Image: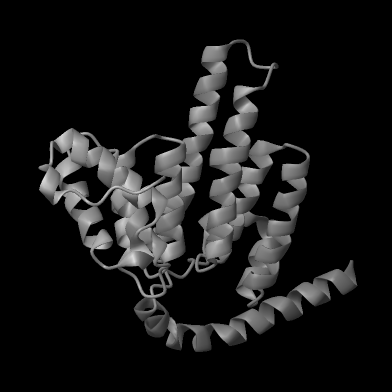
Length: 252
């Protein structure tokens, strides 16, 4: 007991010595969009006393990694509430880790939501569907909070676009997220195409989508992929584009 108290005292003292240095760096972190976690009672409630002491002492990354491993174990056991709690703690400690936000959203919106829809312990299909929607909403919340902490990272916008497309069937919102991802440095080239594809499925936005797809098509053969050709031809029919303005036919 005395040894444990001594170790905790050393840990806490080390953290106190670090605080002035961390305070001096706070402006730099804000410039880099790092919304630092406040070391207060709310954080202690979220991660427990031991985790709070470790975070105070400068071991946030280590604690977050341990929480991530625990979340993986909880996933294997299908303990969905615990998976949520552990990822909530990990992302609180390491808000600039894109991987944590992506994995949290994937477990909630894909794994947990599907598990709920097939959970025979729930009384009926209505309750199962509602439980599935609840977990999709939790996944969406993880990604939205991740974006607020990482507005410069295209991966999270892309992940949110996939959620809108595959889980919510909201093609207009998906197109917007893909467009936001495409505007950021380091974004994959395909997200511009995906933005146009999703827009082409959004009712009332056919003309806008047609223009976006034409711009991509006119960039050359590299952009003229089968999906782009197919969506252009679909919109040509829907918009009744004059024959002489349509792209050449090709085998699909």
